[in-house]
Image (cartoon, rainbow, N blue to C red):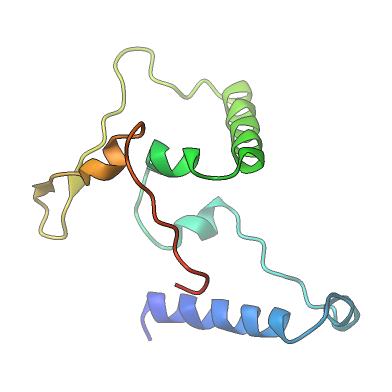
Length: 121
């Protein structure tokens, strides 16, 4: 079974357990919902950076954005992680190892369009 299939099975089992038990039953049965940390979010990839288009961040609710920025502020307070000289630059590399053009829609945070996924996609 592939890593992706294992992940999908685990998520399905957790969702099934939580969906088919009331909060009281979850507590009574001692079911602990999975809380993912950063390592679990990155899974078994070799990714070194998290890259999220600004357009998507700005299309989240104001409450979500404020909470996200507070967490970024905490990161800034804990570490001196930003480069002193230069800046990070994002390029998309395809599965063939060649650079590909970025989706111009997500690169234009002022005029780009976002379509939300339906629940379950």
